[in-house]
Length: 172
Length: 152
Image (cartoon, rainbow over all chains, first blue to last red; front, side, top):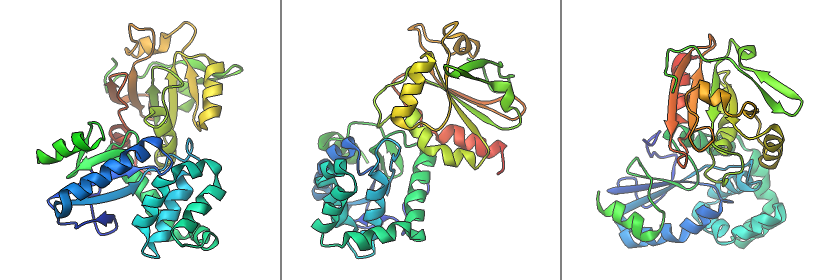
């Protein structure tokens, strides 16, 4: 079970009161999360106002060296109202993360933010706490790899392509 | 498979080619034993990578993480370095699988099963869980039990 339940600290596309809430625990440098990204976008488009989509951070920074920096960057972008724009930009240009920090800086510039200012926010207490809290909530919720999805609070263990997830959501 | 309430069998296994670790030397703090089939399984959904990342949470409860597989100490060393593993991986290598057998989770295929044990500071098993080889059980079950038995 998802814990804590979706709340107003979460980043959400759509409404918290949507009949279906899809939560993803993801790592910006995980190739499987990137592969899932377009399928998630299709689900959001397909279900429209019936679905709310929440993204929580689960950076596996020991195996993905830029995962934590990317998560902190998305949170820093949130302070400028650009969380989802940054989320899309990182997944769409994930290969740049292989170049390390210079690659991430290119992604930051691509959404019109300043890399130096953004990196300064990485040590902001609220931002690091949000990423750590997301990770810990994932561990407590039984996340066992990335991406992990929860549909209305219950862990989804199927494939993460559009049609498999669409079927699982329809059953609700 | 050994069940909760049982005394955890003691063992001494190699961590690196010239260092070994004895379970009873850790008495006094909780120990999470993570038996797993093999080093070098795919990474994003890997159980060792997951526990490695969650290690600071376990440390809040003074718990020590130990991984155990039948891989040799040289293999563990290479795997640990490549994946930045920050807890000991023990080699249940000679006689092969002896410790896995003593915990009742040795697989007919010749590897340790994917099993989790939580041992309390007195050496008693408090939690035991066996998963299919291909399923990473996650850290939630053992962490919940740890929180129950050990206040930080």
